[in-house]
Image 1 (cartoon, rainbow, N blue to C red):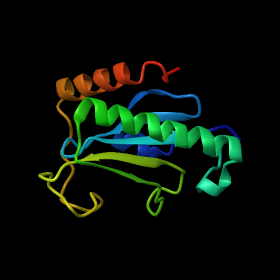
Image 2 (image 1 turned 90 degrees about the horizontal axis):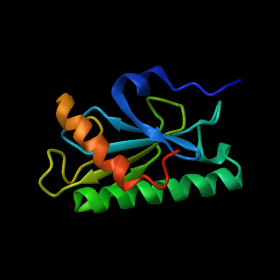
Image 3 (image 1 turned 180 degrees about the vertical axis):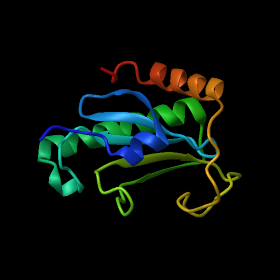
Image 4 (image 1 turned 90 degrees about the vertical axis):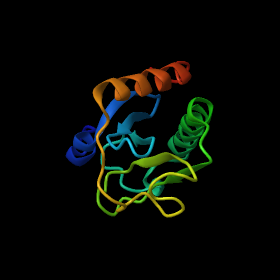
Length: 138
């Protein structure tokens, strides 16, 4: 069995690049700078499905992505979560949050209607994040 990105994740996000273990994607909701890491491991649904080495690698990637968001966007808080109630494929959300964002202080899930990025704004953010993560991107 080879890795395939869940169709819902593909439809709701844009690729940024591949890290050593995970594909990094930008959720298409301009209200929240929202990244997802999807480990490229076929059949992985839970963190406990990863071996110790892959769990460590994923934590390192989460840290790098979180630091990049802090550096580039100066959020008030990072929200980091792996839920999987809607999309079972293992993926980790790393979301830059601000005290003045539309959902603060509640979670972003289920809050209002997503607002797609304008193409130029999306590409500008992706370029900034690629620059901040250039050492980690394959």
